[in-house]
Image (cartoon, rainbow, N blue to C red; front, side, top):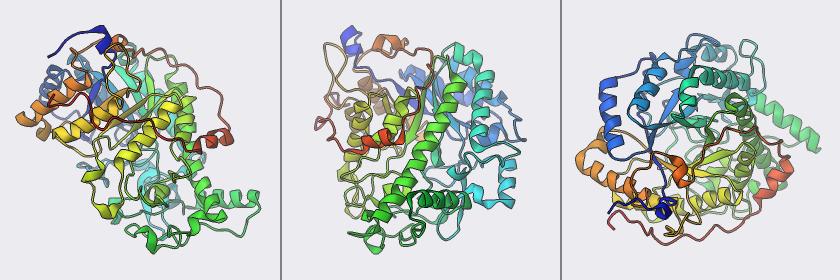
Length: 496
């Protein structure tokens, strides 16, 4: 039964749907606007709150430095607005292609790839020297080698141009979130498990810090620490190894030594600083707009159950049973008033193969709890397309881990959930019928609510970032705190 009850409305979690990766083609054309309109109206009729879309750097700044063409995206945004949906826009500074689910290929701009021809170290590099052209290495964040601009300046200029060219959509409050891409697949991480280089689940992945810029940075860090004799790891294995077969991750391996801890701290801190710097620029670009900033953190759930957490470590999340690798990220986000968007909400431990030592449920609890403890908003999405009630019920549980409160806002509530992704499979009738029930339960059995203020989602003008948090204060958040208690299953089941 659908009702409209002011108290129950406080339990409403909005649902967004990710648009297809190639909705704007690599030639910068809006693909099939009529077909898309039909799909968007179908989503609106199913009470979906909005959609999310990648705004690809490789499409917009294709023709040359600062030569932006937003026309196809303006048509897309107008269409979304006409269909009565809200919009989450991702600043996608990464390549599409080479990751799970990538069905189209959109490289980063050719003029950037051309610079990489003469200086291949602008790309992430593994120990054997293989380059990854999905995203520029953090090592060039502050190197003015892109026709006089640094990577950070490129990202900053892009976001400022987005704001100027989409000002009407920002003013009309069509755009509610700007998710800032910070790495491969848009996630704040290193490209440690690239399928394009032969990685297969559940391989531990590889460290990606062997370009000349990061090597020089590490060398300088060692000199400051008085350990010039240490070097980058050479015992961490290859993409598809298991932890125990490596010197670095095996029991009592390098990762627990002073040298290993120094490296892992440096490697993960580089990531924190990368996110912090780019969010500073995003905040300046969108200051005063009624939007939220957001970033995405990857759900690396394999090897979570073993002491070394190898797959998380190679991705840059320095997370161990006695060290929280995610709460420092949440603390960094708090100064930018930004949302932490996390993946793998649909997964259950019991569905994973035992040899992957995987624990997605524990991981989700840890990351979301860390965000709530740092007093930031958390949002999320599913990692793989699922159309069954088991997966939907798991997402609903994570959205309100302690259930609904019939008398007002629930103790814990996610800010929003984005479903991956709009497809023919989703729109197939029986799948879509279950999806509509999922949306209703996310809305706590309430009618669609067009005004987010009615469920406590006030989007105020973006305030300036707070002063930079010293690294030692960020790292105080590595002290583990048990996660909040979760109900064993949701009190808002799809079958209910």
